[in-house]
Length: 403
Length: 165
Image (cartoon, rainbow over all chains, first blue to last red):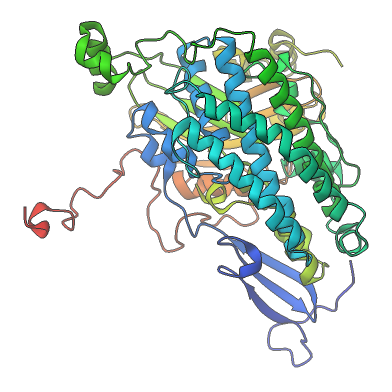
């Protein structure tokens, strides 16, 4: 931090200038506007403007049945939509008291951890791009493509996945999906190792990131940070470990923690999380092998849509289909908060239900929105080029920021 | 540190604040209490300073048009060490939607309160910068209130005759 003389407006000695960073700046990777007050290359103040892609999801959700809200959650953090989808399904399942079979839990963990890896690939790859190294990003992108192919096998879509249903999955994982997961488990570790070799002790990268935008644990907690950036600041808070959902308690994994919360620490924490995710996926694959391979959803006919063949040929299935689609099933009148560890932090769903088919009120606790509010205050005194990589390492996703 | 139970938490709150704490049950294991506006800052400060609730998870609001006090401001707070959450609610009358700000307790409350103001029009007294955050600055209504429909019922640009039907 440097001390700057304070100038009033129109003071001829005022040497600061205003810089409009964004909303469509190539270095911000999304629609972010920051109006910065610059003294040469150094930032002396700034204001973030957000809301450019606000789509009123919370209002729309009040008018939609539960299962139609899943596509809205896709569009929050679109770099890891399956985590959002699963978080929403689990919120509804918590509300309705649905217990899932173990195999479904493990399948969900596989999908969620793949999503976490794909999100971290993008974040750490882009961090490399912003510090001047394009290779790592392109090299890793191939493996994000591989993960998207797995989604494609499981649900048919790639980016906005709408994966899973309330009570399980819409269909079982096929053999190609498992084969692709296995080839990912085999092929990705050497690549991640090379990626780490490219950056972790790279002089240029370390000089650009070490001690940049360091955040104390106190400040991070006071700003309600969560996720990898909070852990990089030295707080070992991970929803998966603290309040295990979806059978995370069955798995053996570690929560990586950084020390001073700078960009370098965040990079290291994300890399280590990818390794831990790989471990979890492997464990789930081993556990699934022992389960009945035909189970892919819970037995909740009142909320899980029956397969189409049965609807046309089976009276009971037709009745349930009608009841679900027309929303004729009562739901509990209560309120529920459920949170999952999203790729950026604690993704929470607060739902107030009045017994109807759509929520009375649904609020998304979006980690990007809450993490980003420290950006302008913490940029004060920083060089502009450092502020750019700070934004990359916060991994703010515009869809999650604005909802 | 051992896990804190809801009973212990409620007991320490009622010992300190007595009648001001109105328990509202534990939906899905999450202790919910209602506090009035006069006590909310004292309760939040006590939760953070004495009971280790250092992580403000979220602030939001709910609108119940049919209730006497139509607006509820809802705080979700998390004790990371004790592994326990609490939900604190404050009811506000429609004519007087003022509540003191929590920015002085958690810096993170800043944008959460701006968002709540933006969508429900809750006035957080003492907030350093209470402006709209997601909606356009010149919007005149608070769109998450129940009286505002999802779509303007009077809009005509989606009428069938524009599409030759």
